[in-house]
Image 1: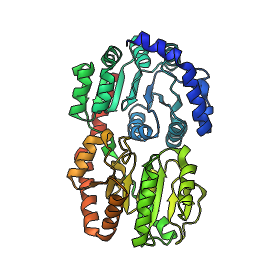
Image 2: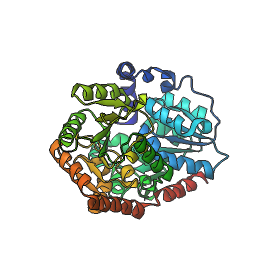
Image 3: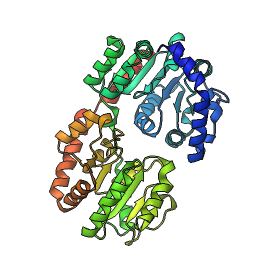
Length: 422
């Protein structure tokens, strides 16, 4: 399939795209707002001539934040525009940067929408986070001589196979990229095999390793636990969970409560549209449950705190003694394991980590990550860590050593972007 056929199929599929948008708006009303932006209609006024950064959703927005701040400091004269595809990503961008950046949804990958967007924005440089590749947007940039960089790029074996099936579409698209700043050598080779120019591919590492923790965050977490009279309570977090994982986590928590009656679980669903469902599940399962968004008192009787707020995940990790990272008990590929590691927490996950193979391998080798398959193994892992402070220290030290050994990716990425701007 080439780009012309892709564009034709996209146009034919627009009724389905619109129906999906309506379905998502029914589940999460924020999707019903600013629909025009998705078709490059009703875009906000832009200062042209700056840097455009695309971060598809929340995770990419958070990963992009240090890069965006560094670009703002290095190029204060250039306006920075940050686009995304989801309401939660939009909320995160606005919470992180307010009016200091320009922001809208990225229009759908239709040739006329991409052209209209770029004619309005007229950026000097486009930076796409991770692997959110849209053939028409990239081609419209190439037609205008706008260099496009793929930042913090990753490409699993599975994704590479998917791209290879559409080689007549993906090879020209990758050939139009000016820089692919890739996390690992294996991923760099996959991009080259798919059609990226060798001289444009650089192994820079993952900027997620360059995470800096504000000491005030840890102090604030300790203060809150003190307010809850929970400094001595065994407290664990299961974060970024997906459908199918919460039941496993609650089964493990039930077993933990039999051994540790004061145990408290902080349960954080990945997607906001699942917050109410997860609260309902916890209560239906018989757990005394409170919601973070309602600032309900976390008393000695509370057994589960549902983290149903946005932008607080690092803080919620800081509260816990042990961290389980979701998206990994189901075949979703996992989520960022480095955030709890950077906070000095022992990290647990399920076995499905194909989006973080290199990072998980390094953490595992350093003794900082333990993988579990089911509720029984999760129960055992959490319980052992609560009983064994020496093991907690070893996992903490291992995680921090991995972070330290891999830092510098952000500087390498910024060096590559600087070359494209000059």
